[in-house]
Image (cartoon, rainbow, N blue to C red; front, side, top):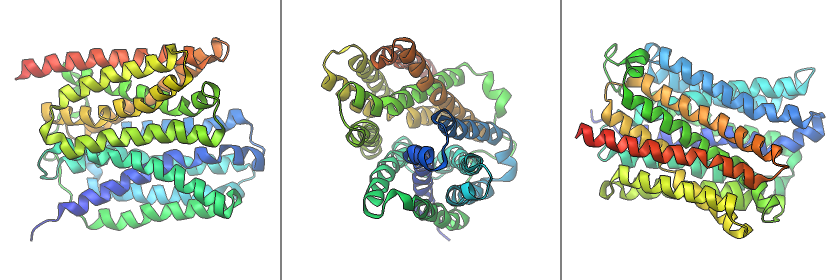
Length: 394
Protein backbone atom coordinates (compact mmCIF):
# COMPACT_ATOMS: atom_id res chain seq x y z
CA UNK A 1 0.00 0.00 0.00
CA UNK A 2 1.32 3.46 -0.94
CA UNK A 3 1.84 5.67 2.12
CA UNK A 4 0.29 9.13 1.94
CA UNK A 5 2.87 11.39 3.55
CA UNK A 6 0.74 14.45 2.81
CA UNK A 7 -1.37 13.36 5.80
CA UNK A 8 1.77 13.45 7.91
CA UNK A 9 2.59 16.93 6.66
CA UNK A 10 -0.94 18.17 7.36
CA UNK A 11 -0.78 16.80 10.91
CA UNK A 12 2.53 18.61 11.48
CA UNK A 13 1.10 21.84 10.03
CA UNK A 14 -1.78 21.66 12.53
CA UNK A 15 0.73 20.82 15.26
CA UNK A 16 2.59 24.07 14.67
CA UNK A 17 -0.68 26.03 14.56
CA UNK A 18 -1.53 24.46 17.91
CA UNK A 19 1.83 25.56 19.27
CA UNK A 20 1.06 29.13 18.15
CA UNK A 21 -2.26 28.98 20.02
CA UNK A 22 -0.57 27.85 23.21
CA UNK A 23 2.18 30.46 23.01
CA UNK A 24 -0.03 33.44 22.15
CA UNK A 25 -3.55 32.94 23.55
CA UNK A 26 -2.89 33.37 27.28
CA UNK A 27 -0.89 36.63 26.84
CA UNK A 28 -4.00 38.18 25.26
CA UNK A 29 -5.75 37.61 28.61
CA UNK A 30 -3.08 38.93 30.98
CA UNK A 31 -4.97 42.11 31.90
CA UNK A 32 -8.22 40.13 32.14
CA UNK A 33 -6.59 37.77 34.66
CA UNK A 34 -5.25 40.80 36.54
CA UNK A 35 -8.65 42.46 36.81
CA UNK A 36 -10.87 39.41 37.42
CA UNK A 37 -8.64 37.41 39.76
CA UNK A 38 -6.65 40.22 41.36
CA UNK A 39 -3.34 38.67 40.29
CA UNK A 40 -0.46 41.18 40.50
CA UNK A 41 1.21 41.96 37.19
CA UNK A 42 4.51 40.69 38.57
CA UNK A 43 2.95 37.25 39.03
CA UNK A 44 1.20 37.50 35.65
CA UNK A 45 4.64 37.70 34.02
CA UNK A 46 5.43 34.27 35.50
CA UNK A 47 2.86 32.72 33.13
CA UNK A 48 5.12 33.23 30.10
CA UNK A 49 8.20 32.25 32.10
CA UNK A 50 6.50 29.02 33.22
CA UNK A 51 5.48 28.24 29.64
CA UNK A 52 8.98 28.62 28.19
CA UNK A 53 10.75 26.91 31.09
CA UNK A 54 8.38 23.91 30.92
CA UNK A 55 8.93 23.74 27.17
CA UNK A 56 12.69 23.89 27.78
CA UNK A 57 12.57 21.00 30.27
CA UNK A 58 10.42 19.01 27.81
CA UNK A 59 13.05 19.57 25.10
CA UNK A 60 15.75 18.15 27.40
CA UNK A 61 13.66 15.11 28.35
CA UNK A 62 12.81 14.47 24.70
CA UNK A 63 16.49 14.23 23.84
CA UNK A 64 16.77 11.27 26.18
CA UNK A 65 13.45 9.44 26.15
CA UNK A 66 11.46 10.02 22.92
CA UNK A 67 13.33 7.37 20.92
CA UNK A 68 12.42 4.82 23.60
CA UNK A 69 8.77 5.85 23.77
CA UNK A 70 8.36 6.20 20.00
CA UNK A 71 7.44 9.10 17.74
CA UNK A 72 3.76 8.20 17.38
CA UNK A 73 3.01 7.79 21.09
CA UNK A 74 4.90 10.97 21.91
CA UNK A 75 3.28 13.13 19.25
CA UNK A 76 -0.20 11.82 20.14
CA UNK A 77 0.62 12.74 23.75
CA UNK A 78 1.43 16.26 22.54
CA UNK A 79 -2.14 16.60 21.25
CA UNK A 80 -3.61 15.21 24.48
CA UNK A 81 -1.56 17.61 26.65
CA UNK A 82 -2.31 20.58 24.39
CA UNK A 83 -6.07 20.01 24.45
CA UNK A 84 -6.14 19.22 28.17
CA UNK A 85 -4.15 22.34 29.01
CA UNK A 86 -6.32 24.68 26.92
CA UNK A 87 -9.51 23.25 28.38
CA UNK A 88 -7.89 23.41 31.83
CA UNK A 89 -7.18 27.11 31.29
CA UNK A 90 -10.94 27.65 31.12
CA UNK A 91 -11.78 25.34 34.04
CA UNK A 92 -8.89 25.18 36.53
CA UNK A 93 -8.90 28.80 37.81
CA UNK A 94 -12.29 28.10 39.36
CA UNK A 95 -11.23 24.74 40.81
CA UNK A 96 -8.33 25.95 42.96
CA UNK A 97 -8.48 28.21 46.03
CA UNK A 98 -5.96 30.44 44.24
CA UNK A 99 -6.97 31.03 40.57
CA UNK A 100 -3.33 31.73 39.67
CA UNK A 101 -2.44 28.16 40.68
CA UNK A 102 -5.09 26.83 38.28
CA UNK A 103 -3.71 28.97 35.47
CA UNK A 104 -0.14 27.80 36.09
CA UNK A 105 -1.19 24.13 36.21
CA UNK A 106 -2.94 24.44 32.85
CA UNK A 107 0.04 26.31 31.34
CA UNK A 108 2.42 23.56 32.47
CA UNK A 109 0.20 20.89 30.88
CA UNK A 110 -0.11 22.56 27.49
CA UNK A 111 3.55 23.66 27.54
CA UNK A 112 4.49 19.96 27.65
CA UNK A 113 2.38 19.47 24.52
CA UNK A 114 4.03 22.48 22.89
CA UNK A 115 7.51 21.18 23.70
CA UNK A 116 6.72 17.75 22.28
CA UNK A 117 5.44 19.07 18.94
CA UNK A 118 8.35 21.51 18.74
CA UNK A 119 10.84 18.66 19.06
CA UNK A 120 8.97 16.03 17.01
CA UNK A 121 7.47 18.05 14.14
CA UNK A 122 10.79 18.65 12.40
CA UNK A 123 12.23 15.10 12.57
CA UNK A 124 8.89 13.56 11.53
CA UNK A 125 8.85 15.75 8.40
CA UNK A 126 12.59 15.28 7.82
CA UNK A 127 12.11 11.50 7.84
CA UNK A 128 9.43 11.67 5.12
CA UNK A 129 10.64 11.05 1.52
CA UNK A 130 9.98 14.58 0.23
CA UNK A 131 12.06 16.34 -2.41
CA UNK A 132 13.73 19.65 -1.45
CA UNK A 133 13.41 19.06 2.29
CA UNK A 134 14.88 22.46 3.18
CA UNK A 135 11.94 24.14 1.43
CA UNK A 136 9.44 21.74 3.05
CA UNK A 137 10.96 22.45 6.48
CA UNK A 138 10.72 26.21 5.97
CA UNK A 139 7.07 25.94 4.89
CA UNK A 140 6.34 23.75 7.91
CA UNK A 141 7.68 26.38 10.31
CA UNK A 142 5.74 29.12 8.54
CA UNK A 143 2.54 27.62 9.96
CA UNK A 144 3.61 28.74 13.43
CA UNK A 145 3.73 32.30 12.08
CA UNK A 146 0.35 32.10 10.35
CA UNK A 147 -1.05 30.45 13.47
CA UNK A 148 0.18 33.39 15.55
CA UNK A 149 -1.49 35.88 13.21
CA UNK A 150 -4.70 33.83 13.28
CA UNK A 151 -4.75 33.59 17.08
CA UNK A 152 -4.30 37.35 17.54
CA UNK A 153 -6.78 38.44 14.86
CA UNK A 154 -9.48 35.79 15.43
CA UNK A 155 -9.31 36.15 19.21
CA UNK A 156 -9.58 39.94 18.90
CA UNK A 157 -12.59 39.48 16.60
CA UNK A 158 -14.20 36.99 19.02
CA UNK A 159 -13.76 39.38 21.94
CA UNK A 160 -15.22 42.25 19.90
CA UNK A 161 -18.33 40.23 18.92
CA UNK A 162 -19.02 38.15 22.04
CA UNK A 163 -17.11 40.06 24.72
CA UNK A 164 -13.88 39.16 26.48
CA UNK A 165 -15.87 37.70 29.41
CA UNK A 166 -16.53 34.66 27.20
CA UNK A 167 -12.83 33.88 26.82
CA UNK A 168 -13.35 30.43 28.41
CA UNK A 169 -15.48 29.38 25.43
CA UNK A 170 -12.74 30.54 23.08
CA UNK A 171 -10.15 28.48 24.98
CA UNK A 172 -12.34 25.40 24.48
CA UNK A 173 -12.77 26.24 20.78
CA UNK A 174 -9.00 26.49 20.29
CA UNK A 175 -8.66 23.09 22.01
CA UNK A 176 -10.59 21.50 19.12
CA UNK A 177 -7.50 21.80 16.88
CA UNK A 178 -5.24 19.51 18.96
CA UNK A 179 -8.18 17.18 19.70
CA UNK A 180 -8.70 16.70 15.96
CA UNK A 181 -4.96 16.34 15.41
CA UNK A 182 -4.75 13.42 17.85
CA UNK A 183 -6.56 11.35 15.22
CA UNK A 184 -4.31 12.68 12.44
CA UNK A 185 -1.12 11.63 14.20
CA UNK A 186 -2.64 8.29 15.22
CA UNK A 187 -3.24 7.22 11.59
CA UNK A 188 -0.71 9.09 9.41
CA UNK A 189 2.51 7.32 8.27
CA UNK A 190 5.49 8.10 10.50
CA UNK A 191 9.08 7.16 9.72
CA UNK A 192 12.25 7.35 11.81
CA UNK A 193 15.37 9.33 10.95
CA UNK A 194 17.78 6.64 12.10
CA UNK A 195 17.41 3.01 13.15
CA UNK A 196 16.90 2.33 16.83
CA UNK A 197 20.19 2.69 18.68
CA UNK A 198 22.03 4.06 15.61
CA UNK A 199 21.78 7.77 16.49
CA UNK A 200 24.76 9.74 17.75
CA UNK A 201 23.17 10.47 21.11
CA UNK A 202 23.73 13.55 23.29
CA UNK A 203 27.40 12.89 24.13
CA UNK A 204 28.23 12.03 20.53
CA UNK A 205 26.70 15.31 19.31
CA UNK A 206 28.50 17.39 21.93
CA UNK A 207 31.85 16.15 20.59
CA UNK A 208 31.20 17.62 17.12
CA UNK A 209 32.30 21.28 16.59
CA UNK A 210 29.76 21.85 13.81
CA UNK A 211 26.94 20.97 16.19
CA UNK A 212 28.13 23.61 18.68
CA UNK A 213 28.06 26.23 15.91
CA UNK A 214 24.47 25.22 15.13
CA UNK A 215 23.58 25.46 18.84
CA UNK A 216 24.99 29.01 19.06
CA UNK A 217 23.12 29.91 15.89
CA UNK A 218 19.86 28.58 17.35
CA UNK A 219 20.37 30.50 20.62
CA UNK A 220 20.91 33.73 18.68
CA UNK A 221 18.02 32.98 16.32
CA UNK A 222 15.66 32.46 19.26
CA UNK A 223 16.95 35.57 21.03
CA UNK A 224 16.79 37.74 17.89
CA UNK A 225 13.27 36.54 17.12
CA UNK A 226 11.65 36.80 20.54
CA UNK A 227 13.48 39.91 21.75
CA UNK A 228 11.91 41.85 18.89
CA UNK A 229 8.59 39.98 18.84
CA UNK A 230 7.87 40.41 22.57
CA UNK A 231 8.92 44.07 22.70
CA UNK A 232 7.47 45.12 19.32
CA UNK A 233 4.08 46.12 20.77
CA UNK A 234 5.69 48.22 23.52
CA UNK A 235 7.99 49.79 20.93
CA UNK A 236 5.02 50.68 18.71
CA UNK A 237 3.27 52.32 21.66
CA UNK A 238 6.21 54.14 23.24
CA UNK A 239 8.22 55.16 20.17
CA UNK A 240 5.52 55.52 17.51
CA UNK A 241 2.72 56.63 19.86
CA UNK A 242 0.19 54.03 18.70
CA UNK A 243 -2.73 52.72 20.76
CA UNK A 244 -2.59 49.30 22.40
CA UNK A 245 -4.70 47.63 19.68
CA UNK A 246 -2.85 49.37 16.85
CA UNK A 247 0.46 48.56 18.55
CA UNK A 248 -0.39 44.86 18.73
CA UNK A 249 -1.25 44.79 15.03
CA UNK A 250 1.68 46.95 13.85
CA UNK A 251 4.12 45.24 16.20
CA UNK A 252 3.94 41.50 16.99
CA UNK A 253 1.22 40.74 14.43
CA UNK A 254 3.09 42.31 11.50
CA UNK A 255 6.30 40.73 12.80
CA UNK A 256 4.63 37.31 12.55
CA UNK A 257 3.30 38.14 9.06
CA UNK A 258 6.74 39.05 7.69
CA UNK A 259 8.31 36.03 9.39
CA UNK A 260 5.68 33.80 7.79
CA UNK A 261 6.34 35.45 4.42
CA UNK A 262 10.04 34.65 4.68
CA UNK A 263 9.41 30.99 5.47
CA UNK A 264 6.69 30.66 2.84
CA UNK A 265 8.86 32.24 0.13
CA UNK A 266 11.69 29.82 0.84
CA UNK A 267 9.16 26.99 1.09
CA UNK A 268 7.88 27.88 -2.39
CA UNK A 269 11.12 28.75 -4.16
CA UNK A 270 13.74 27.09 -1.96
CA UNK A 271 14.74 24.61 -4.66
CA UNK A 272 16.06 27.56 -6.69
CA UNK A 273 17.92 29.24 -3.80
CA UNK A 274 21.12 28.59 -1.87
CA UNK A 275 20.09 28.11 1.76
CA UNK A 276 23.37 29.34 3.26
CA UNK A 277 23.38 32.48 1.10
CA UNK A 278 19.74 33.18 1.97
CA UNK A 279 20.52 32.78 5.68
CA UNK A 280 23.60 35.04 5.50
CA UNK A 281 21.63 37.79 3.74
CA UNK A 282 18.85 37.40 6.32
CA UNK A 283 21.34 37.63 9.19
CA UNK A 284 22.79 40.90 7.89
CA UNK A 285 19.26 42.24 7.37
CA UNK A 286 18.41 41.28 10.97
CA UNK A 287 21.34 43.33 12.29
CA UNK A 288 20.25 46.30 10.16
CA UNK A 289 16.68 45.99 11.54
CA UNK A 290 17.91 46.09 15.14
CA UNK A 291 20.01 49.16 14.32
CA UNK A 292 16.97 50.82 12.72
CA UNK A 293 14.94 50.22 15.88
CA UNK A 294 17.69 51.33 18.27
CA UNK A 295 19.56 54.19 16.56
CA UNK A 296 17.05 55.93 14.28
CA UNK A 297 15.47 59.12 15.62
CA UNK A 298 12.50 58.61 13.28
CA UNK A 299 9.92 56.36 15.03
CA UNK A 300 8.45 55.18 11.72
CA UNK A 301 11.87 53.93 10.57
CA UNK A 302 12.27 52.16 13.91
CA UNK A 303 8.81 50.59 13.58
CA UNK A 304 9.67 49.46 10.04
CA UNK A 305 12.77 47.81 11.51
CA UNK A 306 10.56 45.89 13.97
CA UNK A 307 8.30 44.67 11.16
CA UNK A 308 11.05 43.72 8.69
CA UNK A 309 12.96 41.93 11.45
CA UNK A 310 10.36 39.16 11.27
CA UNK A 311 11.34 38.52 7.65
CA UNK A 312 15.05 38.50 8.55
CA UNK A 313 14.77 35.88 11.33
CA UNK A 314 12.20 33.68 9.57
CA UNK A 315 14.65 31.33 7.88
CA UNK A 316 17.07 30.97 10.82
CA UNK A 317 15.33 28.28 12.88
CA UNK A 318 14.20 25.95 10.04
CA UNK A 319 17.38 26.68 8.05
CA UNK A 320 19.64 25.67 10.93
CA UNK A 321 17.64 22.48 11.41
CA UNK A 322 17.95 21.65 7.69
CA UNK A 323 21.72 22.25 7.66
CA UNK A 324 22.17 20.16 10.81
CA UNK A 325 20.12 17.31 9.31
CA UNK A 326 22.16 17.34 6.13
CA UNK A 327 25.58 17.62 7.81
CA UNK A 328 24.76 15.29 10.73
CA UNK A 329 22.35 12.68 9.33
CA UNK A 330 22.92 10.38 12.33
CA UNK A 331 21.96 13.12 14.79
CA UNK A 332 18.55 11.58 15.40
CA UNK A 333 15.91 12.90 17.79
CA UNK A 334 18.53 14.06 20.29
CA UNK A 335 19.86 16.60 17.78
CA UNK A 336 16.41 18.09 17.13
CA UNK A 337 15.64 18.22 20.85
CA UNK A 338 18.92 19.96 21.72
CA UNK A 339 18.50 22.47 18.88
CA UNK A 340 14.96 23.24 20.05
CA UNK A 341 16.29 23.64 23.59
CA UNK A 342 18.92 26.10 22.32
CA UNK A 343 16.28 28.13 20.49
CA UNK A 344 14.05 28.22 23.59
CA UNK A 345 17.04 29.21 25.73
CA UNK A 346 17.67 32.20 23.46
CA UNK A 347 13.97 33.02 23.52
CA UNK A 348 13.98 33.03 27.33
CA UNK A 349 17.21 35.04 27.71
CA UNK A 350 16.94 37.61 24.89
CA UNK A 351 13.76 39.51 25.88
CA UNK A 352 14.97 39.57 29.49
CA UNK A 353 18.21 41.28 28.50
CA UNK A 354 16.39 43.88 26.41
CA UNK A 355 13.99 44.54 29.30
CA UNK A 356 16.75 44.82 31.90
CA UNK A 357 18.79 47.27 29.81
CA UNK A 358 15.64 49.28 29.03
CA UNK A 359 14.82 49.60 32.74
CA UNK A 360 18.38 50.57 33.70
CA UNK A 361 18.40 53.19 30.92
CA UNK A 362 15.39 54.99 32.37
CA UNK A 363 12.80 52.98 30.42
CA UNK A 364 14.48 53.87 27.13
CA UNK A 365 13.47 50.96 24.90
CA UNK A 366 15.82 52.06 22.14
CA UNK A 367 18.77 51.42 24.46
CA UNK A 368 17.35 47.97 25.13
CA UNK A 369 17.15 47.31 21.39
CA UNK A 370 20.73 48.53 21.00
CA UNK A 371 21.84 45.92 23.55
CA UNK A 372 19.80 43.37 21.59
CA UNK A 373 22.05 44.01 18.56
CA UNK A 374 24.49 41.52 20.09
CA UNK A 375 22.21 38.64 19.07
CA UNK A 376 22.06 39.28 15.30
CA UNK A 377 25.76 40.22 15.39
CA UNK A 378 26.76 36.85 16.88
CA UNK A 379 24.24 35.22 14.53
CA UNK A 380 26.03 36.67 11.47
CA UNK A 381 29.42 35.55 12.81
CA UNK A 382 28.02 32.05 13.46
CA UNK A 383 26.66 31.91 9.90
CA UNK A 384 30.09 32.88 8.56
CA UNK A 385 31.68 30.05 10.58
CA UNK A 386 28.93 27.67 9.46
CA UNK A 387 29.65 28.54 5.82
CA UNK A 388 33.35 27.83 6.41
CA UNK A 389 32.38 24.42 7.79
CA UNK A 390 30.25 23.84 4.70
CA UNK A 391 33.12 24.65 2.32
CA UNK A 392 35.48 22.42 4.28
CA UNK A 393 32.93 19.60 4.16
CA UNK A 394 32.55 20.04 0.41
